[in-house]
Every structure is written in structure tokens, then in C-alpha cells.
Image (tube, rainbow, N blue to C red; front, top):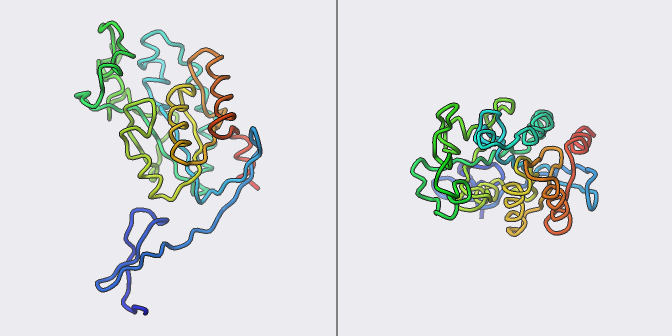
Length: 259
């Protein structure tokens, strides 16, 4: 049986739409043509489908990467956290042109902190004194890691473009208590490129959860960094390659995109 009445698309993602009319609903999703690209990687080389991929950029925000942000205020050298900026400035426009969604996953707490437990607050304010989550930065007055504040905004060197997707997180994992998984499944994404800081903390935790949920996980080594000691970085690379996915870099990715 066929229906001649004109149907209209219904769905927020072109990859996941019904076609509907007053009298009929077509549940058949329209096929998306694969767009394979090959890149060098570890522990093996990779071929990924750009039509089923997204890049997740984690915590490239002022509180972690700016010289007047929170980490700098508490005495952390943020120079390592700034090293992904230049590679991302080159990689993100190329990925956008290739139709790969750019998803910014930033720490952005509620102003009332009601979804944060004392155990989480303790990590960042162990004695109950000092500048912790939600407290104003002495230099700018912006509340630390609060949604929509300067502190939680992406650094100016990495413009957020129209069409990019933003997700606020409240834990080290970008999946916990956020819509990230629902967004990715609505986009019909299966492969995730990971970038951002800190590689051994929020990036790794998000990547691990992605692996547990069944996504293909690829860490972009030069687009990730950490302010932790070097052994933490080396352990992150080891664990990603050993247990959770693959490692490549933006130079090899861009070379693959150019072929």
C-alpha cells in the first residue's frame, strides 16, 4: 500500500527523521551515504565514516585554559592546557566543512549547585575555604564553572560557530546527568573524536563512558592535553590504546580529509 499525500520531515536530525502527513507516517529513515576516510593511528590504522562521526571538545574554557581563570588562580600552570588551541583552530574548520558535528562539552554548573554532592564539591574546596565551584573569581568576579558565566565560556581563540552543539556537564564525564548520549544517538553518530582538557580526567572519563556505551573512541593526541604530571598523560595514552579505543593526531586526520 502507498500513500500519495505529501509527507513532511519530522525530526531534529536529518539522519533520524520520519516522513509524516495527516493520514500516514513513514518510519523509514533515509539512508546516509558512507564517507570513509583513512588515518594513521595507534595501535592500528583506522578507517572511519565521517557521516557517522562527531568531535567532542571538552573543557576548552576560560577557567581551565585562560591565564586569569580558576586553575591559574589556584596556582596551576595553564600553559599545557593551551597547547590544543592551535591544532583545534586548524582541525575544527576542516571537520565542519566535512559535515562532522562539533560538540562542545563544557563544565557549566547550576548557580544553586543543587545537582552537586558534597563529595564533588570537596574535590575543589577540600577545607571549605578558598575559591571553589560557584565562588567568584577574585580577578573577574565570574562564578567558577557556572553555566553562562565568563568562567565557563570557551576561550576566545576557539570560536563556537553557528551549528555547533553545546552540552553542559557537571561531572568529569560528559555523559553523566547530561543529554550528550541522546544527542549523539539522534545524530546517528557511532564514532567519536575526543579533544580537550584535562586528558587524564574529564577527557578520559568521557571517553571511557563513550566506550562503555558502545561508541568508537578516538583520542586526538595533539588536540588534548593535561596540567597533570607527565606520567598521567602517558598512562592516559596507554589506557586509551590498551582498553578504550585508538589514538591519532590532527595532522594525520587533516591529511586523510584532504585525500
